[in-house]
Image (cartoon, rainbow, N blue to C red):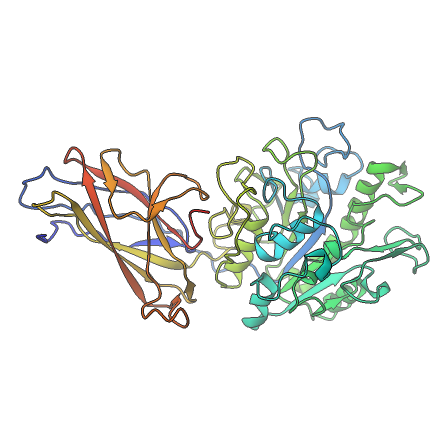
Length: 503
């Protein structure tokens, strides 16, 4: 094989946040020409603003769609619902409450069939539900005490020395954070004024991992003390009880803004009342004013997992686009994890997703590394987008004996954290005249499907231990081998994957 120096050497092209896509076109001369030309690759770089998101507050809500085909179905949707005036004010341009708010219009279920509530809370921690679909308290007999060896978000935060707290309303009325508790003889709830209480472990995502089940968990009253005492963590998860999160109606219904609601509308009114009180308190804090962000999160779609049903997702922050900006970018629970890992400079979670749990379109999977993050809800630069990997493509070279075409590609970690194995280079949109001879397979779980890919060997010495990471400033090289049916142009869009592209 004869190597010929390209006339225009390709430039290194950044791939942002481990998995991204860029388009490039490389020209192949007709066979027999004396030289090969590599077209330069250009990239658009966004100028990050000086301000990035600070303290994060996630408030978990329950069991209602933002939009659904028939708003009169039970449960009723949130958008336009008279029992949710505060929530709708956050999504109404011109309303004073919406100055700092943005919301997602196309936020879908984490995966087809990911129900009931508990798998979605587990997903919010681990980027998967591990195939366990139950609402049971964590017990070995229930098959949902996962998770001793599984990497998850708050474990990553602990390892990185980043503070986090888990606030669970009514947890103090239980014998343990891993035991649910409900009744009618608790203290008077300050939000709805009765003695009913209801702590549900299924709504406590950290409870299903042995290293965080009882760590950093506090009653909701502690949150207000921490907020006023300037002692909030960088990451704060808040779960209201099952009356304040809109899951269940109080036994006597609920009167809100002089209207008495019962049934599902009562549960919506209770949740709206809770948010109308807690969100302004957070917004008045120093932690929020210092570029904090409140994420109002819902668990799952109701009565279907198609794109006709969307989950509410509202962001309130001085760094949001604000004024009820409505993002149409597709998002899901993995989008939240990806955003948090970008904010805290953590590697993306890579827990396996069940092959039947495709996304709402049925064409791909909501792997953390591949989904859209929440950055469209924020001003540019609020969510850090560090360059993690760069691809350095060399020119095409022709073996004049076999007529095969070769290209060497170097992949370098230019980020600040290790990139774990496995690592794959997929060639999306490969031109029809070209075939990747040394492909290890074709993508069948990560859309676009059918793209040939090659494995990138990360482990250098075969010990499957310390070298199973591509460390900062390290690189690996892969050799691509093509056949070309018409000796013409080869085009493709490289895509780096750190999740296995086939089942």
